[in-house]
Image 1 (cartoon, rainbow, N blue to C red):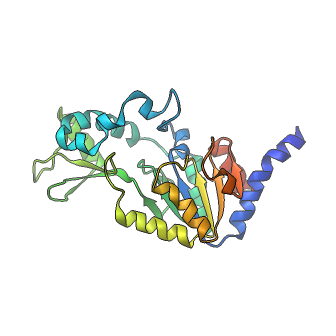
Image 2: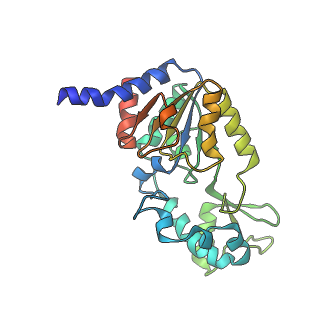
Image 3: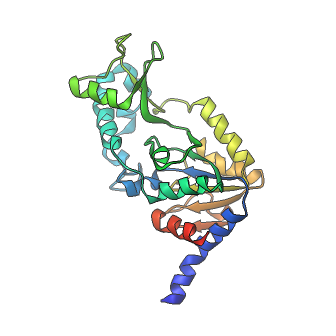
Length: 255
């Protein structure tokens, strides 16, 4: 038993060594880091969010523009399900690594705000965040609490008080480009990294999936903490494929 536990701890110790020796570590996270908080990922067979609905029919920009009430029938439930979710220990470990000065920043594909709630400060949300909704007409911004009040008070899409136009979640919908400023910041962080730590991401959705390659091309080491295969498994210096919380707790303990 002790020998087997020792073998299991070696990848965590290896990742701890990489973090200890790095000066410009960057974290990239996907849906897998938030699963322990109770948020389903998108593609796990039988469980993923898109197993139950066709995203092109409920979460596409054209649906928002053409049928905002129908769009919000789905997205209102999504907002409600994410609003009170708390960060888990995996988020806390990432925040602690930043607090210690080991990690320079976090690039996340998640819209759930949990990295910020856990204490991470330099967070690039490349898919946006549920924190705000925006008015496509005047650019006005409305916080999630007020949006939930509007949804509870009406039967259709929440509207901008000034324009009476449907509010749009400040997230990237299907059919939209990722925000240019956020992606420029993400590419800059990746190109300057000497270690990229990818957590809970299949690394299959572009352009975000290109970031580990950007870091590698610039000379960075690559570490993966995720279950299942990724296109970068052969390029990784170390991979931890167990429970994301257990793996990151082990890495923190080894630092």
